[in-house]
Length: 228
Image 1 (cartoon, one colour):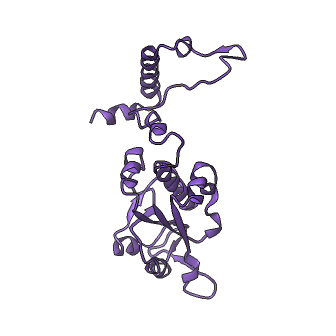
Image 2 (cartoon, rainbow, N blue to C red):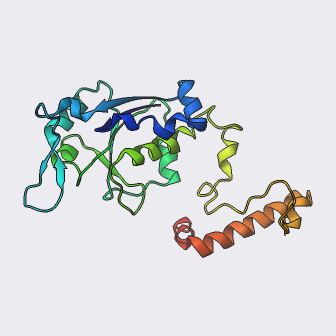
């Protein structure tokens, strides 16, 4: 899987993507990336890539010319994604669809200021995608979230393969149950006896019950969504 990342802050990459299992996968070339500095295509010698928005209002907008030139410089663009609160919220089902074809290339636009000129989105048939109902200073962190969520599902990235993700939150149709490890008693707090019993049937039932209760309490929207 390959990612083209368009940004005015190329020094932010690989960032967290260079550490942990995703970083090791990068070293092994299980996934690759190129960073394109949008300022290299600026409209003047000052590196300007933004301007005031038509119609008035606070904040600047990224101009279409530099962005278009940056996009046009990429030979294999694949699917182009722009991180925006207007897009659908990324979820695990969508991530699995994104990684279904490991030969896929994604071009990720990291917006800044108030956003990018709408004509860029229309011209290149760009998919807008949100990572949550909040606002970030720019799309770079969102790009890292997107790449990380995809890469960890690729073959040979996680220890234990696909089984490592089977019981995670959202993969099981809800939130994960409580997790425990050694010691069995810590600061007077005991691990639930059922987890020490060795009775796999009882353990599975306990985990299912815990998952259902936690999901109902904290994310009832997931229950409604699974019933659709």
